[in-house]
Amino acid sequence: MELENELEAPYKVMVLMSTYNGQPYLQEQLDSIYRQKNVICSVCVRDDGSSDGTCNLLEREQERGALKWYAGSNLGPAGSFWDLLLHAPQSEWYAFADQDDVWLEDKLESAIFRMGKEQSVPCLYFGQTQLVDEELNPLKSVVIHPRLTYGEALMSQFVGGCTMVFNHALREKLLAYIPTYMRMHDVWIYDVALAIGANVCFDAVPHILYRQHSSNAVGQMNSVVFRWRERIGRLRRNERIRSRLAEELWNGYADQMTPENRNLTCKVMNYRSGVNKVRLLVSGDLDCGNRLVAWMGKLSILFNLF
Image (cartoon, rainbow, N blue to C red; front, side, top):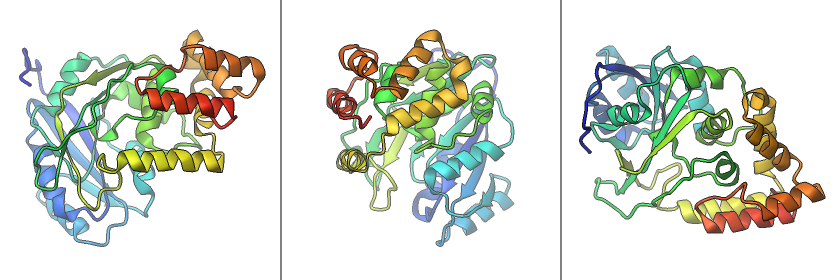
């Protein structure tokens, strides 16, 4: 997509990438980040315990001044990206990057353009991805239609961290509270942004080639089956992830929520009481674009598994 107007000045973006045994596709992804147009792009990488040639590749890139990287113990994707967020150098904008995708040249430019280059108000961008195979041949993608509401965020977890771009104002909000319960970093960031009334925008035009291969940690090729197995497993284990997430959001951000969001958070936290259960079941507070997810969510409320 060509922008009608280019950015008035190069904006500084800090790209945060977590790697783990990602040597086969890492250089191609890094090269696509280096090619970003009309932004001053820096790259900070945390390696999450690789045992292949990933660290050697990163060291070569650092020696030639292309990026900075550091190694840590294996924390998994959520923990590794959160560690990056905590320790990254300050920048105007931040973006998450997976190790095996390919970015189109206008990815960062398009994100900042859509957010209006705002710095004083917390802003978050995420977008649609184009699914591709190992050789970057297009595949049928899972198309999302987010409503961008706090209620939908509490019900459905669909945002892709690999597309996220956000400003320093939102990072400051995120670092002000360290959650004790956070299943995935991208879901947490998205929910916080909506809870506090940040400027959240979605781009339906893909600017990232989301590569699917046998070593994907999580990919769209197997995401439908994987996610439904996960949902059923969580129900069996009685994890109540949605109400636990609501409690975490309340602990960190209740004083920054709108009255409507505080009210909804209280309902979700206390959904097992008769009044709140009925209210959540009959209201549209948790409506989301995916009807099957919405139906499963209602059943979870009904059987005290939300």
